[in-house]
Image (tube, rainbow, N blue to C red):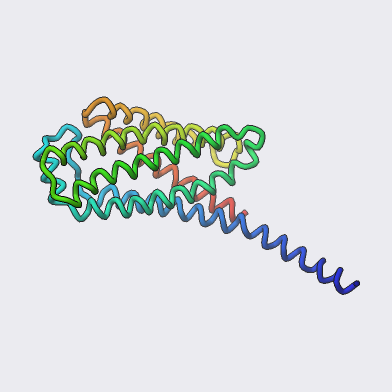
Length: 234
């Protein structure tokens, strides 16, 4: 009897140590996934060279698809892996928010929906360009697919902006990051919303705005990933 109690007592500290290691490993994995997302998406974005302007002619768009067919196909694969890493990274953010919004789960759910919808639309947009690169198509169809891709990317900005606003609000509430990180996230959200005007206009300024918002978002994700890693070490 005494031996059984002693065995149980010695097992409890080991179980507690195992439970303590689980969040640490999870946060480090999420932080690594965040950096992986940034690297993969930057590669996917720039591997295809400089794309035509949003108001480029159909002939120029078709020539771009012909000259960069292999890179455009690779873009979908690399970008898809990046989005998978992004969704894994989100689990780390959720852990950081867990104590800040236990009574009001609305903002975490809003952030999750925004990120999921934005990421899904990015995949759809990339699928449009990959489709144009996989099969020989006429000039008009290539131009249509390119336009659909740009509009879908612009629409993704709505979801990402909602995610950023909710995420920065929650981060402030949890006091899990310096205040300036939230300011950076809010600025990126505003620029994303500016880029969404690309759904109603083919002016290049909106496409450029979406690209700038994406780069700001990448910086924010790297910073939050570093904070996750540091939190895991504490």
